[in-house]
Length: 109
Image (cartoon, rainbow, N blue to C red; front, side):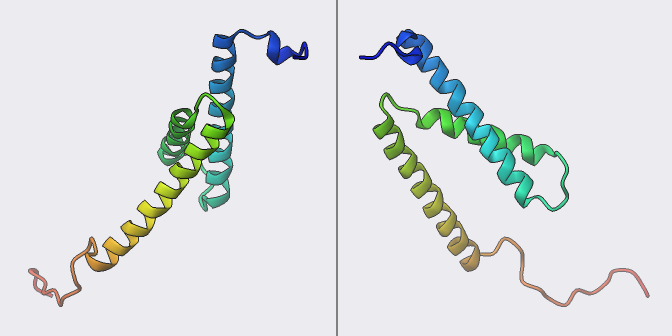
């Protein structure tokens, strides 16, 4: 084994470093995605919640090895896509707004 900087770090510190790097990467990617999709271009509560969820997902996906981390990330992405598709189908079948009907005003015109 080569005498590199990573090999000199203890196991606990290496795990902590992995969590920090994944958290920062998730925060950065969520920030860029939010900036690119936000039309108002201001920091709001949606930005904070979105980046927080990205960090939480990034931390929960971390596994002991790189291969198992990638495998779990794939399942996380697949689960998100399936959930989004099922939500769209559900909302098409049972929309969250009532059907438009002619409304009569209770106030005289």
